[in-house]
Amino acid sequence: MVRGHLVTGDDAGLGLVGHVPVAATGPMCAEGHTGCATAMLAMPSIAAAASVALLRRVGYDEILDLAEAGDPAAGRIVANAGHALGRLLH
Ligand SMILES: [Zn+2]
Image (tube, rainbow, N blue to C red):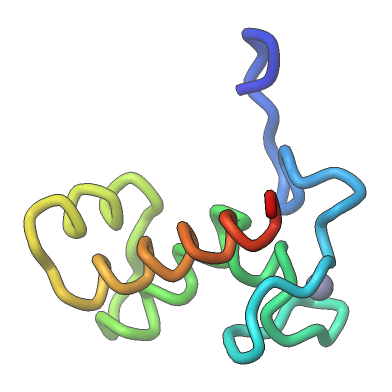
């Protein structure tokens, strides 16, 4: 959400910083970067990481629910995204 409007798309909300490196390792984005902001923070990237870990298709909202419920893989993915966001904002 930006100023009350829902923003959608792979780079929603990331704007010009979408491909800034934020992790030395991590998933790859469509541009071939490893650990860039899009690869670590875009909702489809987070959903893809969880789907790989849990061996089934997992939606973004479900990942947050699983993490809150104590699922170790979902919790780690959310924590990694949080750390990446911290590096992006630093
Ligand atoms: Zn990238």
